[in-house]
Length: 253
Image 1 (spheres, rainbow, N blue to C red):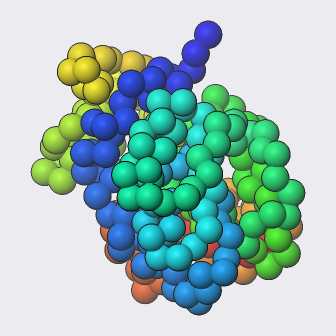
Image 2: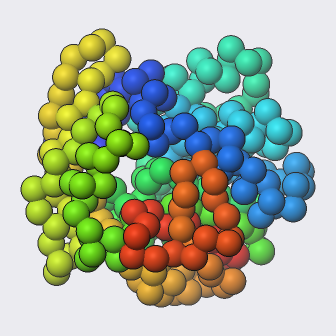
Image 3: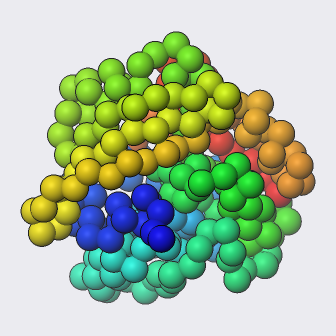
């Protein structure tokens, strides 16, 4: 039986690229470059790369990027976009819980909830972090975003998705946030690339900063820092608060 995230990305690549939450690519890559000290010799693994927007932008800037995703349809679109720009990027179909890499990369990125934290269990989400650690060289950079568990304690998830900045494209209706598991169940309505509307039931895990820090320390990461994840404008100056829907995490192996 296919999981909700598999169903979501079966035929939702061109439409996905028009969603509001995918429009901050260039600014987010500016931050990634800063964290890498603009060293374009770095090899980067893009986990949950989707249609390849970060991988393509970083390759334009001279980096060597490998993108992995579970969705064949998303990868097909990523390859098409790279070919249009004559960019050589390896886009490979892999499950983020079981990657074939070991100390191969100088950096791993996982943005816009790429893989983590969409899995069915906490153990599966933890395994994604473990696979990222395994793929990195010593002192490698791990940079990812995830859902901020502090936000739904103080705010309505529905209100966030229904405000002006989220008004177009896919829509979300929460059916309940579970304080015991920090999981939000919601019905996502979206239009696929053929113009057909779908409604699927989703289940996403929100994490509080202390959980993220504990998991990363358990895996041997150090220099763990957590910030606000501002769309298209990641910055170390932006402290995380209860007002922020997503958090930005940086760590070193």
